[in-house]
Amino acid sequence: MARQLDEQIAGRFPVGQRLRVLDVGMGQGTQALRLARLGHQVTGLEQDATMIAAARAALSGEPEGIRERMRIIEGDGRETGAHFLPGSFDVVLCHGVLMYLQDPDALLAGLARVLAPGGLLSLLVRNGDALAMRAGLSGDWAGALGAFDDVSYRNRLGVDARADRRAALTDTLAGIGAPLHTWYGVRVFTDTAPDGTEPPADLETLLAAEERAGKTDPYRGVAALLHLCGVRG
Image (cartoon, rainbow, N blue to C red):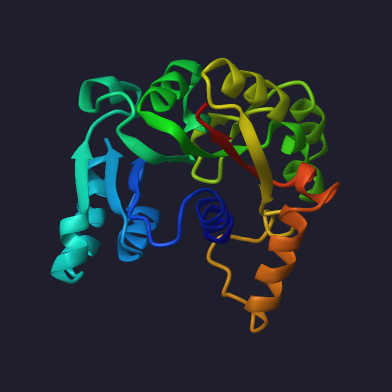
């Protein structure tokens, strides 16, 4: 996922440019902090107090220069208009958020609004076109059958969520002025691995296989997650 994002950034912006990045639903701040370490000016937006505390704790252990490049704002991603002016960011991330919203269109429109012309919108969503895969590979045949028609599901944390179909999101991105530029599959081979599994000894080989599959048809189409990159017109 990080490699895919870096690939898109490298292909769109001059080398060495310090980008203005917004990470909506930043969680513990892993991606935001990584980008701040790379020299970018990063704003993380998060509403969960536990996640904010974890992000601030991680940031406090960084050198002063990195701490100065990253700010954390407590807030709802659907309220970007209340926090930021139009065109404020070169890159906007929204990873693992849409699946918890019944109607994400307003959020997406707000993200496009704060994106500068030519800017990159990076989304990570559950793949509604492959929702039956995990259930089927786990032997849950009833769940697999139901997933063909229903994009709602319960995740591993026991939280109700929903998936997105790529064709529908492609239309949405075009409608908000940030048409789809490219897309990847994420977790093609590893989605059914149990939580807490120790990394394999050949982790680099696994990551290379995942990266290749995430760019290659038909494998990327059955990935558990989709990474979609839109570009603001």
